[in-house]
Image (cartoon, rainbow, N blue to C red):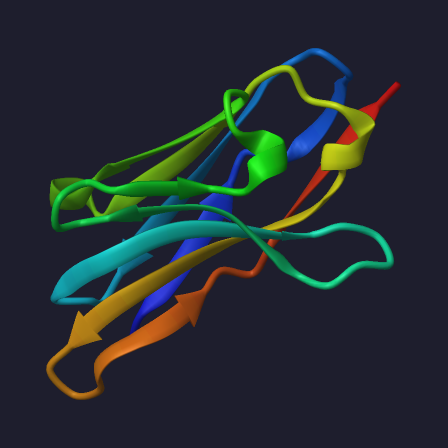
Length: 120
């Protein structure tokens, strides 16, 4: 059974940094590593992705230059380094991945979410 477990959320002041971590278990391979967020009153949005093949990254425009996604395939972990946080970054952040198992093939999985609150 695939599980994604997040850690690292919390409360910080604007301008400060946080690092989120995601640990995957139960998968044979990880195709895409990602982070989404859901801000108060808004739909869930993609924040960043990282592909296993080619190491290609993709970022939400509003976080470019401030957030960095990295991954360690061998350890089945990935992280989101968030710098220069603003109150507009407040929300629940979800670890997301496209993972492969022998029983289900490649499919999308989600972590339970971690709260990030940035005070002004």
